[in-house]
Length: 635
Image 1: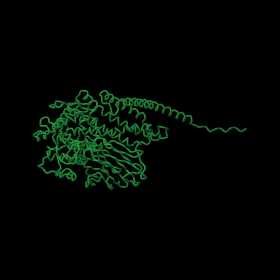
Image 2: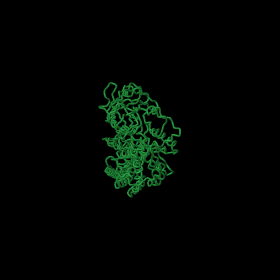
Image 3: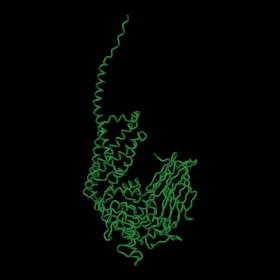
Image 4: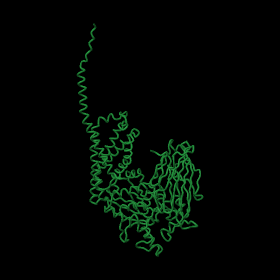
């Protein structure tokens, strides 16, 4: 009988098994505590996130001091827990990019290193700002928060601001490395919310770093203030009715002078020639003066020209320009509440601002009323009320008795809606203003469609509140990256006083309201992409249509229309966009809002080459801000 062959022994297998078992035990000993710490940290982060979400009010962040302090505590806690989570997960993050195969969460896991880095850097930035935030809250609780109190804090905490700015930049770099296509819908939604605030954080920090210089920490700073009256609409918001000079040093307002814009000019000095269209349509204006300097729709151009003219006329060098209309002032007064004006016997607030200004324009506090003699004395004092209101507002701001978070929201709203325009001679700060669109600059894109409708009242009157305006834009794609575009602008003059003949004349009449019952003389400009071919136009006064090529980034289709009270007019422009302008697969339009206007209705219709709609229905919007419209609409 054959005996089974002896099996070969595995010398050392027992030892190897013991070693492997030992390594496994060591791995478990190493991994389990890390896993426990990771899970505990993530659970704490989840609770912190839920608490933070509960703090957020609809439409913004909490502004009461108790909630703000709680938010600072949450930042500290989240920073510690995220550091713990990253330390615990450290070795696992190295393999995370290779875990895309994991069901449901694989995509999120592949992006985990970038997501964690982004979150950590954001919390680093927030944590660096905690001491400054504590100091600001303490000032607010004491009721002593003001610009001159803010400035020393910004100087003292400059290293922290620089640290926070570096962390915000690192967070932005981590964000750019994230592949959105790999993320789950929930994480993608959370990331989209972060995208709303991440650029604002970096830009806010850049402005905070620049603030000491802007507020006069290094010496006196002077800013030109342009009060624009949108009742007489001009390219950047309205006729420049008044001009102010604001002087600040060490965060304190050391000077505020406000005057009628007519009083600024020194006509003994040679002035530059006006733009040709200004001379043509404004009764042959022979020189450019400060009150007409906002003829151009690009505010940086206007601001630089205004500074040059003010230096020419007054011999004063300025460091920036602020333009604001009455809507901006109304929004500020909504926050500040009623402000008493010495000598007027009543307070001014958001509700009575317009009638208050009209009343004291017609009947100045210390001069004859409109229509009384001597007329020249009324004319010299008719705008005194504007300076008095502005002075009272700055006095309230200087006392610190202000709801600063609410005021910040109001100013940001006015900036977004172009009721305030800013330009400063500070490269870092100006770059932030430009990126946010707060400098009122024209920004036509290199690719895609572009449109801006600019109305300029050249009738020497205040009729714009009576004008209703609506814009319809129809685009027919041609399949070669070009299109035929048809712009329709509908005007309706709502004044009721019948007029048989329209006269373009500079006169005041019997009242301010009477100046709103006249004909509308509108110099219309439509900014479009360069290289368009005009196919037709109608609705403009005969012989006034022309194409201006003043900037290689865009072309201007322009002309004059004159509208009587109760009259309706439709201006129609048809042109062809050059081939290759429209990217294949989708249509994209960048619409810029004219400063000083109020949410004009805008309708966009886009058709394929075969005539079928590219969008299921027309896109309708209100031009409260600049807008990007896409067809088909984005997700």
